[in-house]
Image 1 (cartoon, rainbow, N blue to C red):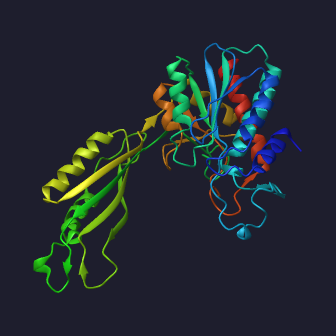
Image 2: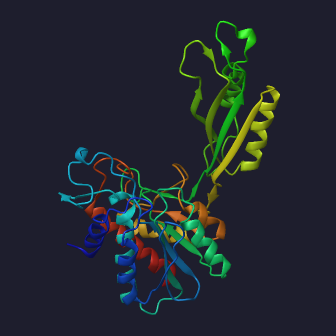
Length: 377
C-alpha cells in the first residue's frame, strides 16, 4: 500500500467528531517534524488548531484543512464501520474519507516527496489545520488567521483540501465562494380566538406579502464569477399547536447566498426597506457566515494547479464558486490567492462516505506538481 493510503487510513480510524481532534494533529506534527517543519498548537476553547511551517521566506504555500468530521448517523446503516477505513476494491470507506482526511494525507505525502526531492526549494510550505470546520467555525481557522496577522506572518498561496471535484478528479476547483448571510425575523401580532379575528392581529397574514416580495426580488444577475444572488426561506414557525388560536408571533429564518455584486450591508438595508414598507412590527437579527471572495483566474496559483491537473489527469479544471461556505472565507481576506481542490464530493456527509484510492494517488501527484510549479520553476 502507498504512503498516502496508509496516512489516510490512520486519520480516518480516529473518530474525531467535531470539535474533537483526538490526536490527528499530533500525528501530522510527528510526520512533518523530520521534514523540517516547525509546528505549534493554537488551541482556542474546545478547538485544536495546528500551524506548521517549513522555511520563513516568500512565497509561502499553505495547505489548509480540518481534522474534524460530522457525526456518522446510525452506524448500523453503514456497509462497513465508519471508522474502520475499510478498502473494498478501489474505494476507501469511512467518515472523513472525502471530507477531508484523505486530502490531508495527500498534502502530507506530497510534501514529503517534494522536500526530499527539492530540499533547497525557494519560499516556504505551511499547514493550517483546524478541528472546527464542521462546527460553529468560531475558534478554528479564523482565530489562527487572527494570530498570524497579529504577528505579521503572511503567506501568498493557499490550497484548501475540500472535496471540490464533481464527476471526476480535478474537473472543478473552487476559486471563490458566495457570501452567506442569515436572518431571523420575528413578526409581532396579537394572539386571539380564531373566531374573532377583529380582536386579534395575525402576524402570518401580515408578513406574507413582504415574504412574497422578498422571494420575487431579482437581487442581481451575478457576474463572470458568480451566479445571481439567492434568497431562500428555510423555516417559518408560528402558532400554539391549536387550530382555534391566532398566533401572537411568527418567526421566519432565511438566508442569502450572495455574489460580489452585493455586500451584507446592502442586502440588510434592502430587506429592512421592504419590511418597513409593509408596516410590520418586527425584530430582525443578522448573522454573517462569510463574505464572498474570488481568486482571479490569471493568478500564479490557479495557473500552477491547472497545469498540474493537465499533467496528471489530462485536463484542466473548470473554475467554480458554487456550493456552500468553507474556511477559505477566512483565508482569502488576507490577500492570499486561495483555491479549493480535493476529491469527489458525491458522498460527503453521507452514510458510506468513500473516496477512490486511485484518485488519492493522483491527487497526491497534483499537489506535488503544484509545489514544483510554484516553488521550483
